[in-house]
Image (tube, rainbow, N blue to C red):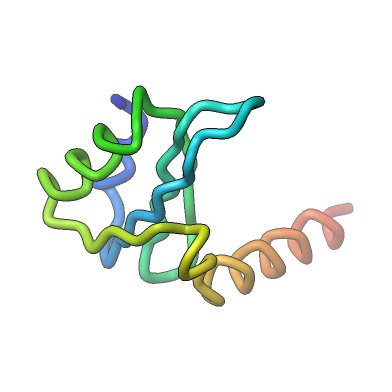
Length: 87
């Protein structure tokens, strides 16, 4: 949770996307900032993810229902371009 707290403290315009647990992975929360920068961490439960978002006043969505925001995909594409252009 410390990493998520740090992300919230250092970024703005954050939305939370809750990812349901599967047989292979625990529940997780994906935080996406206004510019598309994002981070993901496992959490104890879906309830814990929602409580984290509510505690920080973040809009919270079910990732399986709404999907991921375009700005996150755009950020990934920009980041990939920077990695590929390095000498």
